[in-house]
Image (tube, rainbow, N blue to C red; front, side, top):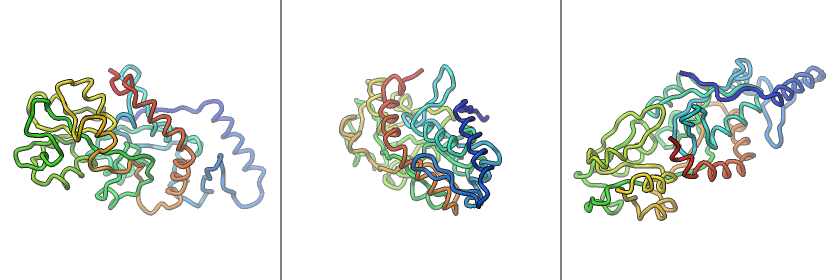
Length: 291
């Protein structure tokens, strides 16, 4: 099911009308459109941008991953730094942003099948994914691990790589890719994550698995919400600054689109202060624990 996350504001409409008027007055070859330090490729320069403009919608594949992308449980509205980036991209192109809910196991396939033009999930830019799609990265993160406080057999990262340890993962995630490559001796219990996002802390508490991986930004919230858990490596404070298997986080798109890539990179570069401010904002407990 597709959800519309943004409608043109009156300012956006005025901007679009102004652009049309300016274009109609120009008798020369099409010029590059600019907004601040971001240049939008002229017609004919990027087939994908021309397509997005023609259809009037930028379709963006998403999956929930706080604090980068969240959903208000009361309103259904999607929030987070990458939503702000997506809105800026759509605004610059003069189109609506349409968020297309997907799952980690199928989002790359959905991109390749052209169900959407851009995956803003957010995605760990893993080597496996980079073989099939391109990325423009906008932040980075790593992995922490939740284990029962009473589980004395797992106290360090080295303890994870044992046949007696079961690590619960979400099928197709970048975290799962990294864990499978690093902890080859551990048992991997992989299941498909729901579209709305979830965690596996209850599975640890119920002893169905020994370890639940989590994005480092969630470490403090995990122990606040589930006091029976401990965080590796070294507790929340240590892990947030020394997370395991770090990866850049990026927007994914199909290969051989150099002008689209340059445009997306320019947007990210232009929005760096706003992205950082949004990361701080949406990492707050009231957003991470919204119910």
